[in-house]
Image 1 (cartoon, rainbow, N blue to C red):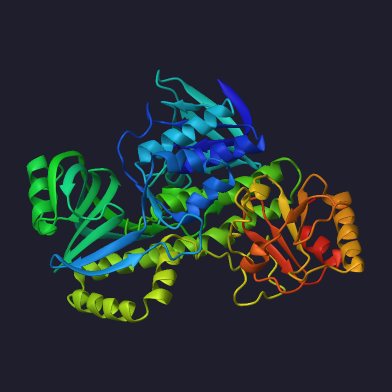
Image 2 (spheres, rainbow, N blue to C red; image 1 turned 90 degrees about the horizontal axis):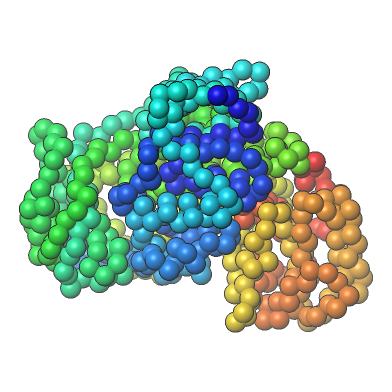
Length: 530
């Protein structure tokens, strides 16, 4: 058998499923294959960060996750069993001020359901055994469960096949980094406890870590390092029960432990996330410490970043050079996450002064909780991600310090009891927001300029953009008006004068200006759009 298609996705974990769902939403033809006969059945990655929740909202599937996930709005730290400090997450600037705890098996199930709504299916028990690039095409050799092989030729291949990526191996892509020697254990447990169920509890001792993350009533994910002189593969329920009792100083009584597994921490990152027609995403491109629950979210955001760009290029609506922005945008973000999680983990495990440093941090935090809780919470929940170098973003004009900046995810705003800003942005277009300013009434000549700008841009990019005028007064003779009667959008975006924001299809801010010169806006859009 042999076949041709625009995109082949290798790997059907969360990262590959996000890529598939987004390509399906964009109407791009693809196949998604996985060598495993069934989806992940264990809990694995359990943290869904606020940034990812907002992405789920942007693409219209957030309610499915909120319905079954368990929100946690704080991280409580302990030393020697005694409460040290709680880092609240509900001070972050989001409609979703929490981390959503949900087993990876459930995340995959919801994404599979989403994929099937587009009449797309994962092809399981198909293993990639070889791949090469030839004349701008990718030639993949696939082995079926019956031993037969198939050649699939595609324009693009997306490697989402995990830490032991076959694509990476066959393409001889270097995966530099470090393996930590300390072994860890993870388990799902039924627990009786008096501890707050809306917080993640992390216990530190001298070189010892124990974390309990609630997944729902009496259901927890527990993680701990092992202090072993030699590696072990099998652990008993009794050992998990005793470890929880000892490390958490009696705060948790484990009734039952399931899915007990051990792991080692690897901290690795490819130098280039694109190799000609092959893109690497998720664990195929980067692996790191699970500290802070960053891993799965980073993979989901990789393919969310890539999918809309690839779709536009395939449809002939964007220049191929747009795809260079994947490396420029995602690599610095991932590199920072790998570096930070590795540094934090090493400090907690091997730094003899760590507990002293943690106490100093606690004292500093408590003296400036309002500022630091927002800063740390924003970092943990990945709301601080900003793309600082990209051909798909204009940095020519600076925003005010309190305004959302180019390269950041556009914040949602509650307009009134029935409407939010995201309700207008859930599409696959570049959304251009024309703010009239917060004054009581825009001058007629200013409104005429906005109408003319709308008309000119729509003539050139009618299939690529949607233009909204955001004003606090009713404008019956203008199209696509967002009535900001209470100035809530103006206030959140810190708009003092007429201004323009351009929001990309992935919800990130591409452009800002107080100048309504259509030539400047066209010049920006022409950088990568046809």
